[in-house]
Length: 310
Ligand code: UTP
Image (tube, rainbow, N blue to C red; front, side, top):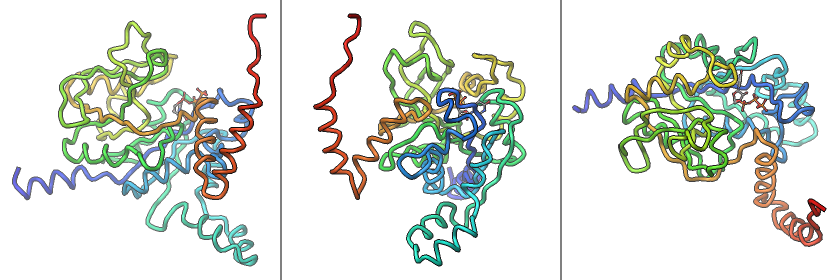
């Protein structure tokens, strides 16, 4: 590649927009999520979705597109200014909190909210973002997947996309007994260290049908072509328009790369993963981490597991 074509290729692959599909019903957290978005459940004092937004902004994304639903209006408020609260904080001299609130969405970042009228599936939710994304590449972050700050995968994914221009997805090795919860890739040749070409992907396979133990973990980069494939997708697993099925079409054409994620990840869409995220963040908390570690130690010494089967 000449320097000129290389820089053209790079600028064509410059990714500015991120889509956050957050219109799901969150049934695993009912009744907490009857009127409140599960994405605003806090990890101590920061909502789950704010972690994903920070990850996108840290990676250089400037336009955030949220696909929301009926019970999700509070997400819009969370990322909007709140002049009354800001004035009250300023008047009472709470400048640290004020600055923290103002920096949630830095001045150079824009937010757009679109609605998915019915929860017809993740693929359908992403299709709803089409008018806001337009004809350019974009990333998708599923906020349920919370990545530890030190090992966030988005930058590696963007580097791969800038290099190849292919749809790029983060994958992680998962235990066999959890394969049925994920989209599982069929890996082909390794294209660079830590990266494999994907020749297919299957949504929620049984252990016997799973093509590998590598699961898509809620971070993707797409070219706008994905919208055409989503539009023609028939409902798949669970009667929903599945993102996995559209990725599978691209994978069969050799246009998908998987970048292996080896960092720490929490599935905050499940109760246990959410609890683990809170415990880890509490243990690492600068103010009370050590005190919390001691509390956990004492609690687990006093804990007597319930006897089962007697
Ligand atoms: P999940 O199936 O994990 O989330 O969807 P859910 O449906 O909200 O939760 P449960 O299973 O009922 O507890 C993965 C992601 O896709 C979004 C969800 O908000 C979540 O971020 N999604 C799912 C949509 O935006 N629209 C849909 O129709 C379905």
